[in-house]
Length: 272
Ligand SMILES: Cc1cc2nc3c(=O)[nH]c(=O)nc-3n(C[C@H](O)[C@H](O)[C@H](O)COP(=O)(O)OP(=O)(O)OC[C@H]3O[C@@H](n4cnc5c(N)ncnc54)[C@H](O)[C@@H]3O)c2cc1C
Image (tube, rainbow, N blue to C red; front, side):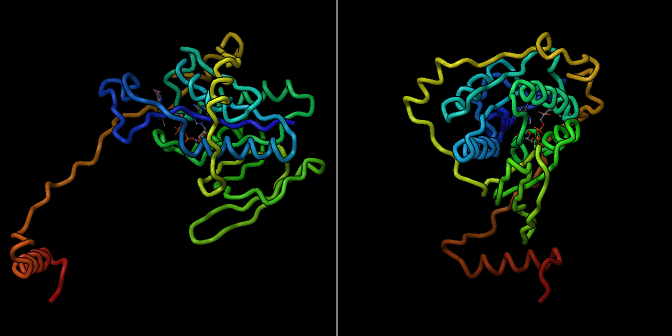
C-alpha cells in the first residue's frame, strides 16, 4: 500500500513580493523552503512507513527548482518523489492545482499493487494560505477527507479504516473514516526528523521523477491558467497609521502615563 505526502515549496519569508501587473508571486531571488505544515505531513507519511511497512511517496507541483524540496523528502526517507512541472501547469488557482495533484495521486496509486491508503497534506501553505488544495484532491478522487488532524489514533489497513483526532477551536474530535483517505495535518501531530548529512548526500544521487503534461496527459482546459476560474484582482499589505510617541517615559513616567490616559479618554477608548 501507498501513502503520498503532498509538499509545496514556498518562499522563506513573510515579505512575499507580488508582481503588480500579473498579481502573482515574484519567485526570483527569494530563498525557498518546504511549506512548514508539509514537513509534518511528510513526517507522518514516514512514520506510517516505519510502523506499517507501507511505501511512502512525495509529490510537488511547481517550478523546476522544487526539486530541492523533493530531495529533502528523499533525504528524510521517502521511497519515491515526483516533480509535477510544466508551463501548462503554471498560473493555476487552487482548483487547477488540485486537478494536477489528484491526477498524479491516481497515477502513482495505480503503480502500487495494493493501491492507495492515504494522502497526507499540510493544513495550509504559508504563501497561498487557502487550505483548499487538500480538500480539492479528496473530492476529485472520492477519498474520505479528514482535516486538521493532530493524531492518528488507529490505522487498520486490513479493514481499511482510520481513526484520527481533529484539533478544533478549544476541543478535539475523534473521527473514524474508511480508507483511502486524505488527511490535512496541523503542527502538533509530530516533530519532523532532521535528515543526517549522509542521508542528504545519498538523496543527491537518487532520482526525482519529472512528470510534465506529456506524461500526465491532463486536458489542458482543466489545468494552469486555462483551468483556473478564479484570478487574483489585487494583493496589498494593509496600511497602518503611523504611531505617535508620547512624552518621555524614561525621565517622566508619571507625566507620560497621564498623557496616554488623556489620549485614550479623548478617543473614547477609556472612560473615567
Ligand atoms: C485565485 C487564485 C489565483 C492564483 N493564481 C496564481 C498564478 O497565476 N500563479 C501562481 O503561481 N499561483 C497562483 N495562485 C496560487 C496557487 O493557486 C497556489 O499556489 C496553489 O493552488 C496552492 O494553493 P495554496 O498555496 O493556497 O495551498 P493550500 O490549499 O493552503 O495547501 C494545502 C496543502 O495542499 C498541498 N499543496 C498545495 N499546493 C501544492 C503543490 N503545488 N504541490 C504539492 N502540494 C501542494 C500541501 O500539502 C499544502 O500544505 C493562485 C491562487 C488563487 C487562490
